[in-house]
Image (cartoon, rainbow, N blue to C red; front, side, top):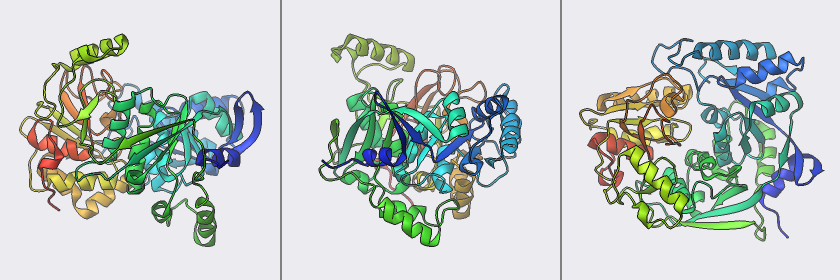
Length: 470
C-alpha cells in the first residue's frame, strides 16, 4: 500500500515509537514570539537547561507590539512593554535568532517564517501559536504547541506526539475572479463545521489547490485550525521550490538542488489511503463572508442570514441564536448591504504582498465610504517595504486607509487598541468569536478583496461587482 505525505514525514522525523499511538518526533525548527517566548525561555533558564541548537531557534516581535508609525517598546496593551523587553533579554541570553523591532526581518511569525526560508518543505516546525499550521502551505509539518512543550522542544529538539488520523480534502474546479483561498477555507468550515477536522492531520489537494500561488496556499492552511485540525499540509511542487529559492535561511547552490530532489518525493502515493476524504467544488464558489461568531457561520456574499429554526440539532440551533443576537442580525437579511463601521486588512491569514496588491487593485482611484475607519497592517517589515517600493501604500492612503507597521495588530483584542463598542467590522482575519476584535465588536470574516470592496461601499459588498484598476 502506498504512503501519504504525512506517513513519509512522520517516518523521517520519528526518533522512537513509544507505543500506544505516540511517537518521539525530531523538531527541526522552533519559532517563538514575544507573547509566549519570554515565558518559555525564562522557565528553561530557571531549570538550568540550555537551548539545544540555538541557531535553529527563532523569535520575533509581533503579538503585543504597536503598529503605529514611529513605534518603540511602548505599547497600548497593559503590561505589554514587559513582554517585549523580557523576550528581548531572554532571547539574547539564549543566543537564538531574534527579529527585534527595528529589524527589517520583523513581522508576524507565520509570515516571517516562510518569507525568510526558515520554514521549508519537509521540515518539522513548532511554535506556541495555534496558526502554525499556516506553514503547511509550503509543505512543512508544522503545528502549534503550548509553553511547556516549547521548553521541551527548546531543550531536546524533540516532542512526544500522539499521531492523529489522516484526512484528505480535495478542492476541485476553478476559482472565478474575485474568489480566493480565504473563500475556499471558509466554505470548507461552513460545510463541515469548525469541528470537522478534529483528530486529523489533513492534506489539502486537488486542482484548485495546485493552481494557487504559494502565498494563497499559506492562507488556505492558516485556517486549518479553525476547522479543528491538528495541522494541515499541501504537497510541495515547482511553485514552492521557486518560492524558496534565494530565501536567507534556505539551502543554496548544490545543497538546494539536493533538497529539491528530496522535496519532490514528498507527495502522497497514488494508492495511499486516508482515514477520511472530503470534496469541495470550487467551480460555483462565491466570495464568502461570516454572519455569526464562528468561521463555520459563513455563506456566500450573495446569500442571506440563515434561520436557526431550520437547524435540526438543538445545540447548533442555540449557537446560531446566540450568534445572531450578538451580531444584531435577523434571519433572511441579505449579507450584501449590511452597513459597516470599520474595515481591517492584516493578520497571519491575509497580510502578504499578494493580498495587499489584490486589495490595492480595487482601491486604486476609489475612496473609503464616509464614516468607515479602514486599516491596513502588512504582515512583515519585508512586506511593508516591498509594498512601499511598488507604491501600494500610496494607494491605501489615498483611498482613506491607515497604513501601519508590521504586527498582529487588531486581529485580536488584548486590552489595547480595539474597534468600538458594537461596531460592525469586515476583517481579513481568522477568528470572529465574541469580543475578538474589541468589546462587543461584531466581526465579519472575509478575503482582502471583499474587505476592500466593502470599505468602498460602506457595507458588505461583493468584490466581483468592482473592476480592478491595475
